[in-house]
Image 1 (cartoon, rainbow, N blue to C red):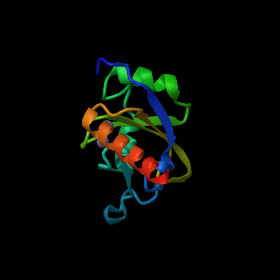
Image 2: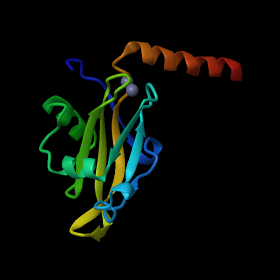
Image 3: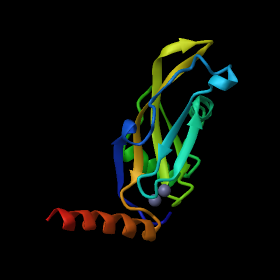
Image 4: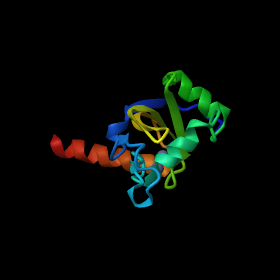
Length: 145
Ligand SMILES: [Zn+2]
Ligand SMILES: [Zn+2]
């Protein structure tokens, strides 16, 4: 990732189907809480669970590298009880950061998680997807006029 791209911060509930994940059901497999993030560029879903978040809590920096970590921290610094879950979209390859915080509910020595914000690339790193999105938007605008 040599190009420094513009990053945008969006409330998590605009991208993820649920933003409150309980810590209470962790030890019960069938009740494992899942959330699905949908990429705004290519609509690819990325599923993660409370255990994914717990692993991310102990991670120093970012699995996507120091450059991405630094850029994210500039646009969306993490608070004391906040962590980040970074991944690359499986569809278009764009890096995504999901910022989450400790929820109010505590159980079995673990806490609930609340998804706060997502940090995304303003433009898709795969230019094809971007062109597609833009042409769709302009088509709609043409129709409105
Ligand atoms: Zn994508
Ligand atoms: Zn993308």
